[in-house]
Length: 101
Image (cartoon, rainbow, N blue to C red; front, side, top):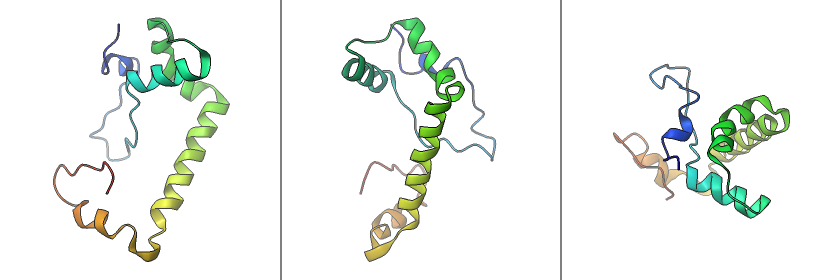
């Protein structure tokens, strides 16, 4: 069985590149939960390896990623009633963890 890091082996992204923003990582458990919930079984190792390519190559999947990103951007831009104030106080801290607020 693949561990959480092996699923990302097929595509390497240089996170030191200033143009790269890593905004979400789906670990194996999340991928397998979605597969089992929606398709009735867990993925094989080969199918797990295909996921990253499928997210980019399949037009509908890539469109949904763009839609999710646009939704998150809209949410991030809205600071009505100061809902981001607590988050913003801590977002500049080194190694800040963004797991809710």
